[in-house]
Amino acid sequence: MNKFFSTALNKLKKLFSGRVIAVIDIGTDKVKTVVAKPSGDGFFEILGYGVAKSKGLRRGTVVDMEDLSKSVAISVSEAEKFSDTQIDSVVINISGDHLSSVNTKATLELASFPKEVTDEDRKKLESIIEQKVVGVERAIVHRVAYNYVLDGESIVNNPVGMLASTMSANIHLLVGRLGAIDALIRSVEAAGIKVKDVVFDAWASSMSALSYTERRMGAILVDIGDSKTDVAVIKEGNLIYSCVIPIGGVNFTNDIASVLNLDFKTAEHLKKNLPNLMESSKQDSIEVKTFDSDEVVRVSLTYLRSIVEARVSELIDMMLSSTSIYKFIPFVNTVVITGGSAKVWGLKHMLGKSLNLHVRYGVPSVDSELPEELKNEDASTVVGLVCYSLISGKKNRSLENRMTLASIFDRIRELFDRYLG
Ligand SMILES: Nc1ncnc2c1ncn2[C@@H]1O[C@H](COP(=O)(O)OP(=O)(O)OP(=O)(O)O)[C@@H](O)[C@H]1O
Ligand SMILES: [Mg+2]
Image (cartoon, rainbow, N blue to C red; front, side, top):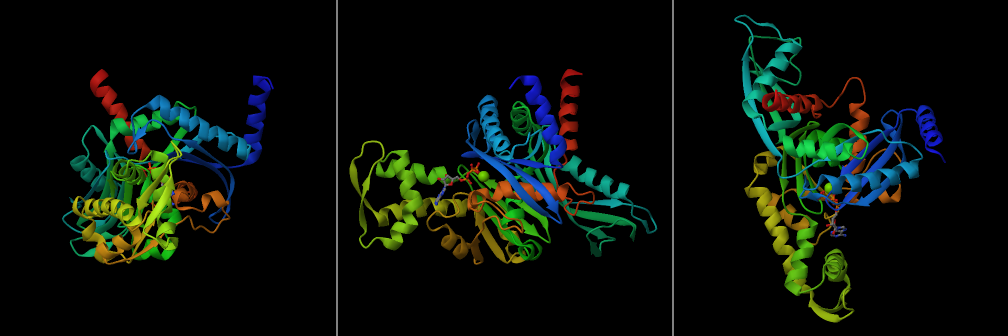
């Protein structure tokens, strides 16, 4: 078909397709695109999806924009064909060890006598906190004011309209390196798609993998992907803590491959099958046919198990020692593990023991019908991005804790002005 007609046809398709949501989960292993159509009252219909092998990311951070852009283009084109739509703009996820989480408090003197708190007062207080925490080379991905304290006493969720002479706020900020955020957005935009919003991986996953009660009562969401683990603590529907740990599925596979001197594919196969092997095998020593040379080697299941458990233990230690997750344990009831590597041997059991909390596997669990391919742990982020888009698309956003894209672009502009202006 000639280019003029195909462009005209795509425009017509868009005109008649109504509002369509497109999201991309940019993972280190896979780039997953989903196209969905809202069908009212928070429900949606999945129109199509596309998956491409991911290139150009290391532990969630862009290391090659061109490679990543190509992966995005393949994934998007597959989703477009499947859904028979044209994707112009998307909501994407973000992760990487450039992200850091800050929980802070600031106070604003309002007046000598109690006065009515305005939205401007609220914004002023938030900007005081931001200036204190965010340097010029960093940008805010999520900002969550999870409670306000009026006159040092009454704790409220929304202070606007109430009387007070001083107002403090407890704020959670997820801050990222401006250069890394910019590289991610531009890699997607180089594939011809506009980025509307950026959402932290585990925050997105929490929207599909946690139940309403878990989100209200408090839960820790742990998303173990290919190259890193994203953690979010959710309470009363808010993101109150987040962190990224640089260990993921690929580390388990690499450990098995190097310790047992096996090729990557054989090690990957053993990693995924370890729970079945532990359950079904009568003997400790099993025969394994290698993928690269068709050679048959003997592997001890006890030894294999100890290799995986050593890495699980390191992951849990890092989660507990390098983060302040302990502080939040009294405020949560459940830990939900999701992401492609959630089922790695020993993780559920060892995490439950270390945190002394109930741990369960989390898969996308939404009111809408999902295709089989989007019902697994590795689809939590992409389905969560659809849920996020539905909520944030509403006029009165019930979740305030969205990324302030404007603040990122303001900062990019500020940076340009500073160096070039
Ligand atoms: N049954 C299984 N048991 C253990 N690991 C598994 C299983 N199935 C898949 N994996 C691992 O899951 C990982 C991919 O998960 P996922 O799709 O969530 O990653 P990603 O989102 O692309 O990466 P990331 O979030 O780290 O950027 C791979 O390392 C893969 O080996
Ligand atoms: Mg992921």
